[in-house]
Length: 448
Image 1 (cartoon, rainbow, N blue to C red):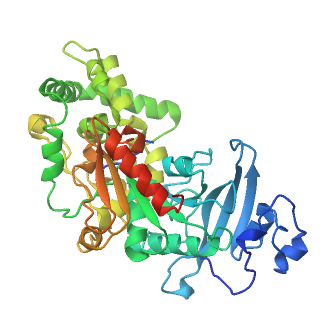
Image 2 (tube, helix red, strand yellow; image 1 turned 90 degrees about the vertical axis):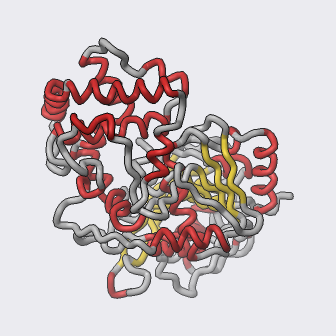
Image 3 (spheres, rainbow, N blue to C red; image 1 turned 60 degrees about the horizontal axis):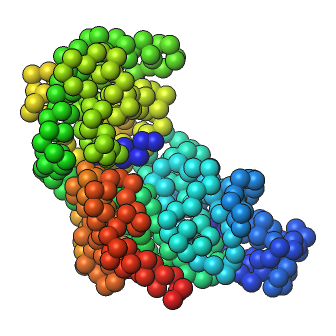
């Protein structure tokens, strides 16, 4: 797998705010805090302030018509099994439209995005949307060194406590959704709390069941697209590595000019090699057949090779300023989620850094990486045997889903967007599959 997107509640019995209490007329803070509000009394901002453990950070004035946009902080346990471990504040955002509408729980898998953007499920349903920043990302960072509490189960419990709290405001149907790593987090939440939501829409979520077997990824990258496109990518990789001294020097010069460094990865030369190894994966993840023509061909200049690699693999990802933001991602990859390999036979004579693209390159050496081989098989078994009301939407040209979830429970389905990449959605499905997906979503949300 790869960086697919390039880019608790400490609940008390007090202050239960009924959904009917959300209206345009604000109650006084004293009445809200005392829980004395009657139906129709509370403005949503006051209702949010009344929820235990929740802080209203700000209301932003950038929502589309019919919505209000709130940035929130929620007090969460660092360890859901041990209150003595302390708490941290988890960043949430809320796009509120009406308490009697469905609510979409949007898992990011990474840091929250403060630009208001409704997911496909929220748009189709005209729903409220609650975005959850993943623990240890962005502003949602427990204090202390290391990432011992960054696990599938702890994050699932975060989401569970979010739903429990916000049901006080939104008692209607809840739908969960997420894409890529956020889609993975959505599945993990359902595994441990299957009844929190009425249904789940998952976009482009990898499922690396056996971390020792990377053959699915290699087979995909050796068969995706046309033979000519695959050969062009391989030739570009070789051309870059044949000029690695010049291009690595240019990479280092960029870092020097911007004040960046390569201490985490271990140098510009190694970072360049990692980017080259990952380039085909990232090309097909976001590229289209039209992008094949832009792959540098024979006679390409160093400038053209460097620019193409940067556009395709994102060279800033491997320098410290950006790479340090993704340490928790690579920690998860190296401890539970698993990793995929890349075809390298055509590059063997040019590689200098064995295992360069492994998670260990992106996690400081003083942080242990001990892989849990039971974590993903457990998730996979649940999806295959018991997961209900799960919709997986994948693109046929997305290498991230070379290993994908295969739902086997009731009212669940895996649908493929023909020619779709890592951004595949319901709108990209065939007419028949799109109709099924929309019908399922509305049925789960009780809109039909």
